[in-house]
Length: 297
Image (cartoon, rainbow, N blue to C red; front, side, top):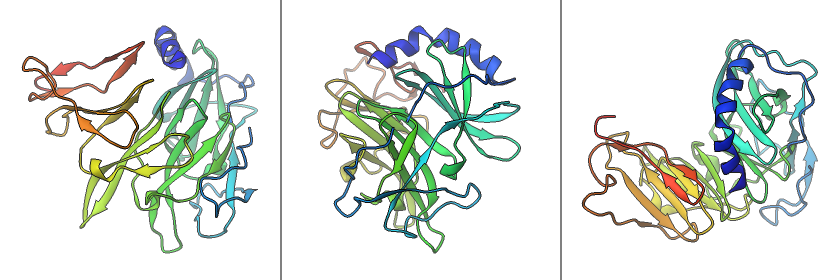
């Protein structure tokens, strides 16, 4: 992926730029990152869309209206960044995006970065309510997820947003029991998208996996419940799931060519995969996947 390759070329400059970002964020206009989403919705019942303003202090409920809301990320006129908790960084077609929350008010925080990692602009994400769990930019558009109230009784679940350009996002209809799940890490690549999260079964929270070919229509892969995957890497030919072993489980690699049918990858006797210890979260470098094994991490 071009974006991933660029991320490694620019990584040194990004790390240097982050020290500057933590003291003050630039006030230059950001390149446009999210355009109105296509009218095709994830389900036939969800064809209408409307612009909704979300109160940042009260997570919205998806049962309030049959319409699907949209929200926008807009550059702020001034963007001081005093102290913040940064949750993640992702590559985009034009550079980078960092997401997190401010320390003082726990307000949603999104920063747009240039291709060289030197120029950053804070975006107004207050209309999205709660903080993003993750954000990815994939071949067909952007996907973001967050934990949010999903009904009037106070239940919470995963809410997904989709955007074609990283500026205007459309909230996707609840599907594949996402509204009863806990949001986790997102992945994107040439074959589509994936999310690792949690579901509750018989009072116990276990890992779960959802995949999508277009970022809009999602399916839970029930055969992968409790597989304990920590990260998905999506290449031109495969979905690759990695269990790092950091929670005490034996490290393992899972492969799928379509995102739906998965099998554990066999390993040789001298492979670090399948042995006690743990491996790092995988990194894609060109056509290779890199992990590091440690016996006592």
